[in-house]
Image (cartoon, rainbow, N blue to C red; front, side, top):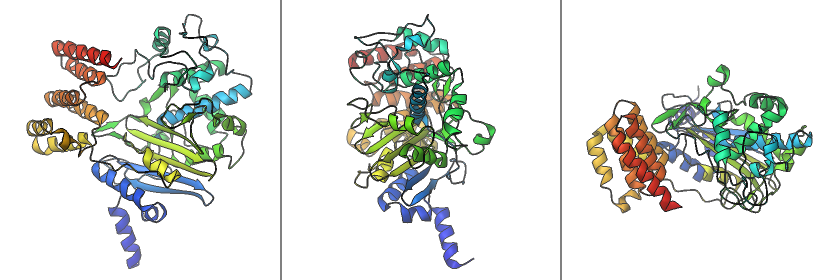
Length: 464
């Protein structure tokens, strides 16, 4: 082995980013990714790029905090809400096949006993569900939040029907936009009813088999699990198989290689029987987008020449997008819940400003508790001034996860105190007090649970 080769191997081993990545990605992005890994924002990340130079991949960090293995293009991640673009493709394809209608009210696709709410002159249709213009809430109102990692894992179709029947629409259907995982999940369910197939059967037969994406599935088979990057919501590890978009529609797991193949098909780099359906999903359907600065397509967000979507589940973040003029596509997959869309957008647009990240408050608190003990650490962080807190990224989800981590690891008082600290930081958050109430219930303290639930109700009233 040459001296030069040895030096390169040492650099690769010591640094989260590969040597090739440092040469091919812009220096600022590489530096910021490494900084975030050092600060605990990320555990691992894979970036895939496709353009006129072909496709290439870059690896950062690890597949798990307990592993030295770096992720690669064949590592499996949960892609979360990017699953909505697959639902959009399937809907467009089924419309072209004459199996679905964009404009037929969804009540005709559901059992007769299910009541679909109405507000305004329009009834909810598949078009409204896939464009987030139905007025349905982001999540079903009867979805229990206590088990942070489970999502819809313990949720049933009947409970979803109850939530739909009882839902209050936020605006007249078709008049405004509000991101709704509930709405798109309901659409995915309707697609299974109309096709007579399961979500996984639809996904494989009508998308992944056609596009040659063998490592993409809504199920976590043993073969996939062996390549799975462990999800992290620090300091909690999470379970990928429980993430759902609806009781009958699992959130998709995939690899950077497969997702780049998916992007290439959407970009028209190669033709398939889905090309016409995919192209129709990229067109502007509503003048506003479900995210700021965007317009709404079918499942996709349109930002000028960029067609994008991101995903987040408990323990994973993802991004896919392409620039129609530059014919450049980007995939970013991370096994951490923390924000990384600025990194992805920078890869599409060199002028995109990167977030100057800060150490997450949850990780700083956790590390102090583990080294100094809970009493000293919580006292220290509780007495930080507003100015001192600006040195941290105050991550709500991370703090909640830290509280339940201690609650579930037989350090109940520490868990309660972390959640009390979080509620004090977010006094107007009904969620903070709901989580605190659930923690009190978990340890059998019904009195404080009810007090916290009341504070949650008061916070909710103030926000209305």
